[in-house]
Image (cartoon, rainbow, N blue to C red; front, side, top):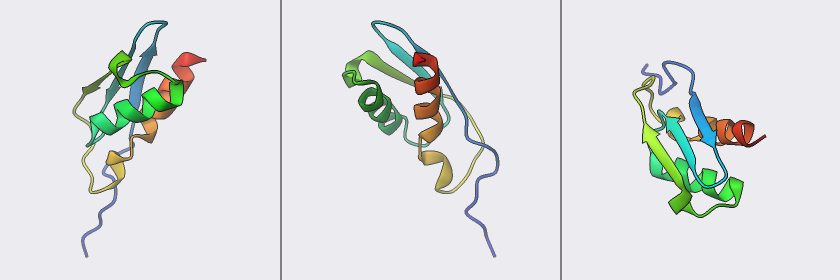
Amino acid sequence: FQSHASMGGACALADVRADEVTIWTATQKPHFARDGVAALLGRPPSQVRAIWMRGPGSYGRNDAGDAALEAAFLSRE
């Protein structure tokens, strides 16, 4: 049996400012995280920069990007 579970918790860091947003994420699809954060914050994707960082490996779970969305929401607040 080979599990496709995460080998560690997903996390992200976000810095939401008036004119730009930067997110650091270990998601497997940082471009989707960028687009999701832009939609969540009501910003154009050109204002959001996603920086990929090495994180825990997994099959499937860490490409969700939900940690980046949560980090951006918290930073905005």
